[in-house]
Image 1 (cartoon, rainbow, N blue to C red):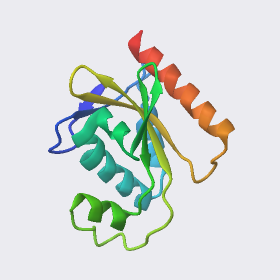
Image 2: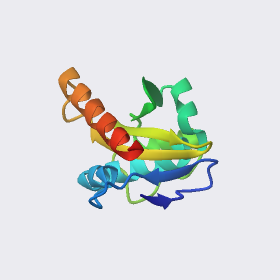
Image 3: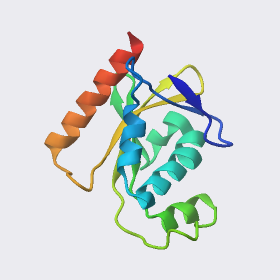
Image 4: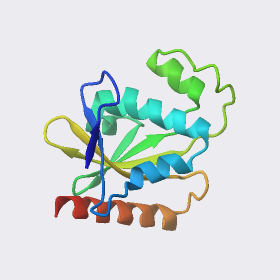
Length: 145
């Protein structure tokens, strides 16, 4: 596991590294187009990094039970930046539909552990959602072992 402090928030963001060295969250992030990468990165840094699991008291998050949480990003870059009060990066003018999910756990008092994620826009079926949650639970159990 390696640590990555993504910003001035009150929570430290860490990305789970599997025993084989792979990082499912990073693989997911890299699979996104540049626009969605920047939206998710800003949301993680500015929302999740400041609120941690408290995002579950808003539309940003949902507790899934047994220590697993879902971080929901469904705002365009412009809407996200306006909501958190930062300038919109100039290189990203488009505002396509965003429907991203990232799964995380909380470690200690102030650490968010990013496990995995997926682009729900590509497949919003309950079957896909259930599979992604199951995979995230497997990663969490693997980390805890």
